[in-house]
Amino acid sequence: MSNSAAPIMDEKTLRWMPWVIAIAFFMQSLDGTILNTALPSMASSLAQDPLRMQSVVIAYMLTIALLIPASGWIADRFGIKRIFFSAILLFSFGSLLCALSWSLNVLVAARVIQGLGGALMLPIGRLIVLRAYPRSELVRIMGFITVPGLLGPLLGPTLGGWMVEYLSWHWIFLLNIPVGIIGCYAVKHFIPDLPGGGRTRFDGIGFILFGAAMVRCKK
Image (cartoon, rainbow, N blue to C red):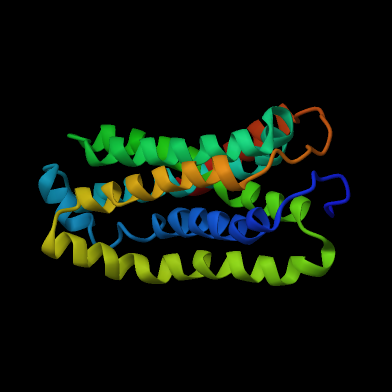
């Protein structure tokens, strides 16, 4: 789990890498709660019963819960840097689709796309740290990148309520786009091509059973 097989990285990369991962963690965790105070306004805008809007939150959280177990295999199969970049890009694209949604069904589908990106950002960000830094640095770096992930759910409801009051609910999602663009640029420049953990067989049956159990629990 250490960086013994990792490529040599310069000081600039080691300094900025935690910031890139921390921003990704903040984006992912913020969107888990930022809609809570905006749902009534969104329901009114989309002409929906406010109770049905809860599916927008569930779609995002359920997608994240379903995909996280497969994230390590995906990273080892296709490359850590490539998947982390794709995760931020997919999250940003999903955010754009959410902002452009004209119906509840479209919004739920867009939240699933957003969740696909969010599910990959969190575990792969931690995987990058584990493979890039020596054991002596792990506690400090892990602590640094974890704090934004804890602040996101706390700030989400307040920030969402403020945006609905002074802007519109669309800005809750549009906010992610410039951050995502910066994140993609930062991944290109500050996240190295780290070695994978070796290819392993994907437990497709176990993944399907896990997904079915998660969906059933949500009903």
